[in-house]
Image 1 (cartoon, one colour):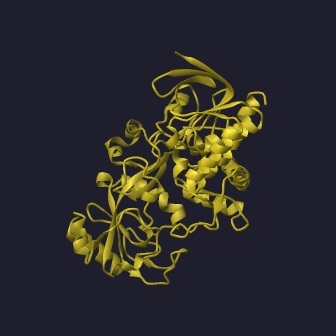
Image 2: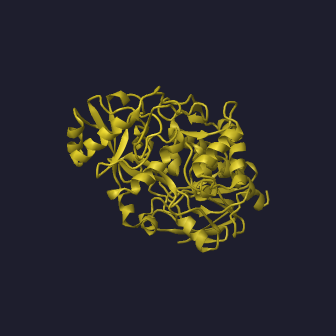
Image 3: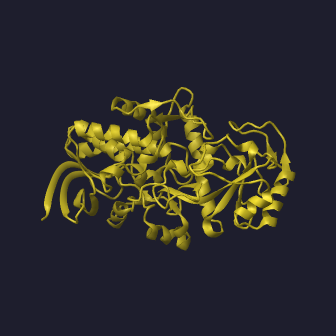
Length: 447
C-alpha cells in the first residue's frame, strides 16, 4: 500500500540543521514533516557527536573570525555566505537557548576554545534531544527510518522500514541530509582503493542519496569532492560512528611518522583548532593510509586523553618494534628531530618559539626533544566526518538551479568550506543556514 503525505515544508534530514529549519518553518506557520533516515535511537546525523559551535562574542570579533576562516580555507570561501554565517552565529546560539538547548563552560585541553566556541551541556545528543522535544511540542511530524529515494521538485518519495514507499507532496523542501562520507563506493570514485582504509567517525546513514538526486536533477554543484573534514583518529576506532572520542589531540606535542618511519608534515604548523582537521587528509596520502603519533613522558597529560590507551615502551627502539615499524628508521628520525630542536619557552596555548632548524619538514612550534622515557605512540587513520562536495546556495539558502528547494548543513557547507576547517564552524553553518532555510521554505509555501 502506498500512502500520500502532504505538508507545507518537508525536511530531509534530522540533524541540527534539519531541526533548526523545521522549527523555524513551523514558527512561521507552516506544517512540517521531517524525514530522518536513521532509526530513532540513532537520529541526528553527525550532530550526535558534536560538542560546540563557533560564534561571535565580545572577545571574538567578526574580522578575527573571518580572518581565521580565510586562513584555513586559503581563501576558498564564498565571502557573502561566510559573513552571513559569522554575523548570525551569536544570534543562532541565543535562539538555541530559547529553544531549550543548554550550554556549559568550555572544556580544557588542546583545542583552547573558551574564547571562540560555545559548548553544549551534554554534547550533541542533549542538543538533539532539546530540538526533538521542541519539535514534538510544536506539532512537527517526524518519520524515522525514512530515506528519501526520489525527488519530484519539492515532493517525492521516501522508503520506510519494511520497504513501504510513501509519496510526499510539499510546497517547499529543505535538504539537510548531510554529505556522502558513509558511501564508500562514492568515496572510492574520488580516492580510489585507499578509501577502503578510511574510518567514518560519524553516522553510517549519510550516504549522499539526496545530494546525488539534487545534482542529477540540475542543482549547481559546489566544492571539491576530495575535500572533507578529515581528522586523524585512533586507528583502532570502529569503521562507523566512533564519534569525537576517537580523535587524537597529541599530534602537535610530538612527531608523526608513516609506516616507513619517516615524518611527512609540520606537526606544529598552527594552533590545533585551525589545523586538526587537515591531518586526516595527510594520513590518507601516506602508504597504507596509516601513521603513528609518537610522544614522550613530557607530553603526557597535556592533551585530551584518548578512549584507547597508547602503545608504551622504555626506548624508541622498543616502541618501533611494538608498532612493527622499521626500528633503524624510527630511531634515526627521532635522533634527527632531537638534534634540530631549538629550545625556547614552551607554551601549548599559543604559537611559541620552540621549533626546529635545518630539518625537513620543519616543526614550527612546540618542538621538544623526544628523550624522556617511557615513550608512547598512537596509531592514526583518516577519520572522515563530512564531505565538502555539495549544492550551491544563495543568501536565502535556495539551491541554485532548483525551484522551492533549500539546503542547510553539510550538504551546502562547501560554499563556505572550500578546504580546511575551524573547530565548531560546521555546527554554526548548520544552525545559521538551517534557520534561514526554514524561514525561506515557509515563505515559499505561502507563510
